[in-house]
Image 1: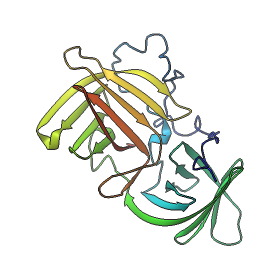
Image 2 (image 1 turned 180 degrees about the vertical axis):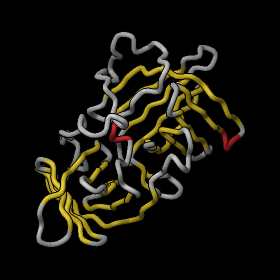
Image 3 (image 1 turned 120 degrees about the vertical axis):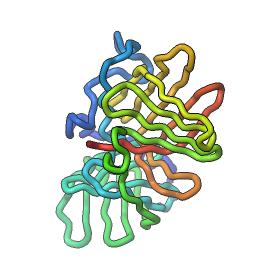
Amino acid sequence: MSLRFLTSLRPALFVAGSLLLSGCATATLDGARPGADKLASAAPLLPSMLFPGGAERLEAWRCTPQQDLVTAFGERELRLWSAHGAYRLSPAVVASGARYQQGDLSFWNKGGEAVVESANGQLDCSAAMARPALTREQRPGVMFHGRGNEPGWNVNLAHDAPELTLVLDYGAREMTLPYRVTGMDNANGRVMLASAQTAQPFELRLEARACFDDMSGEPFPARVTLTIDGQTYNGCGQGIAP
């Protein structure tokens, strides 16, 4: 079976959900809408699938054929991230265990075992590890946190202004910079940001995809790519709701 088990599926409910979490922009990363390159006075509304929703933790699943997934179980939905996309599934009636479904995609689990089915086939999965979702209490004033390793780095997007703080090279460099949105694709959970300061250019890409810390293995709902000073930093991240 192709490793792209979940590639062709498209989430139908991305536009639903809290307006506190999902943006209203319709531009894609292939071309920003008119005026998107102007510095806004407020922080943008990020796509909802960069966030764990109301879930208190994120879980990693190791599946056969080989594919790793990330889930977040909320009160009324399951959020599921694969290497190729992000999906929102609703509870379905089942005799045993818990089942969630959206279109032809379904997720059934009981204990630490799960079966994921779609029109493309079936994945047999086992729970690997979990971590608590990041909260605003833990990171005051931050609406998105990303980080990576070798060398250690992190980025925090402010919740109230188009501004981010970068900590690079194991903490040797720290800078707070304004940014502008150059692309926003809510349907697929992708955002492209660029520096609003000519003296210090950078690009930051956020994508709603399954991501695992390459040292700890901890699961995240977003992949983060930072390009600055001719270097590219890769890592994982999570949106943080108020």
